[in-house]
Length: 253
Length: 151
Image 1 (cartoon, rainbow over the protein chains, first blue to last red):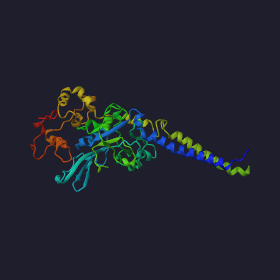
Image 2 (cartoon, chains in turn yellow, blue):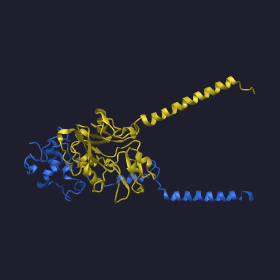
Image 3 (cartoon, rainbow over the protein chains, first blue to last red):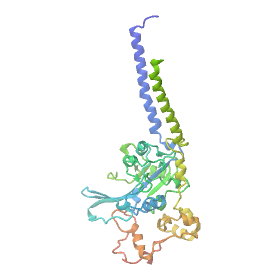
Image 4 (cartoon, helix red, strand yellow):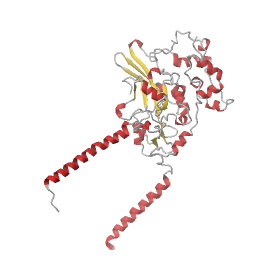
């Protein structure tokens, strides 16, 4: 066998290194293309999404009341699957955010209305994250994302460690004082599966809330996302919420 | 043989532990775990089986045609019946059973003003009144019909 010449050795090594490098560069790009660029609702039907029109919300908290009734959420304050925050932004830049009892008992009167630059209500609920921090941290597989994009809790499996409650960047989970498990907005999964809309959407008097199928190009949420400039909360966290807001302010987090 | 006796002991301990793990896993793991993902597939059925408490607008309009028609032409057209009358799936299932509630004249003012009280936070186009100036202490229904409130 002829000894390998130095020139050939270098050529082969350089070639191999170049092809390896090219492959290494291409692989994550293809992976990213597959898992991040293409919205999952292109592949799965149905795929649930939610929309909130902040410009239409009147802060009546019918949604909070309906949610508590429909899902047996404890009536005491601080247990909410959804709640409505009031933002009051003064001309000097001071921001007040209030949600006394989730908005159920109304809001205190705004003092010095002349100094208010703007004020509005923001309903909060599960953000339906594509990359859910709460699912990632659950140590027992009790919280999960369904094939149609909803994050749910298996109450028989939950051990009540509260890790998910800390992980949720939107504070939408609470610890159920009676069942001793974590609880959260299920987008009324039991209603969606029966062809009904969620309880909060059902009772919303102004149509500020909507739930629908993102995989359907003609659905209400698809149209809402197409026809308006919408925004998700804490987009910088990479959670990719399927809950989007229209008319959000930079002060809303 | 004497040389590998200590290895056999360790192997026996390991194999016993693995066997114990496999038996325990088979006993503890629900059969449908992992069917759809890293969770118990049966949890979905548990959640789907939860009872519905709000019947939905279509269900109300199926029987209460006159009220639905009156409301359809009014400024309250976008509202569901259960927005004011409460959760009524039980009533829809058994119409002779639980009856819909409606706010009494005494509490009506507070009820209507939950939406219609003037506030800087409400959208500018939304119809609101100032509680202290708009016929104080008179029930809203003296002038406005709840199903078709415009005068």
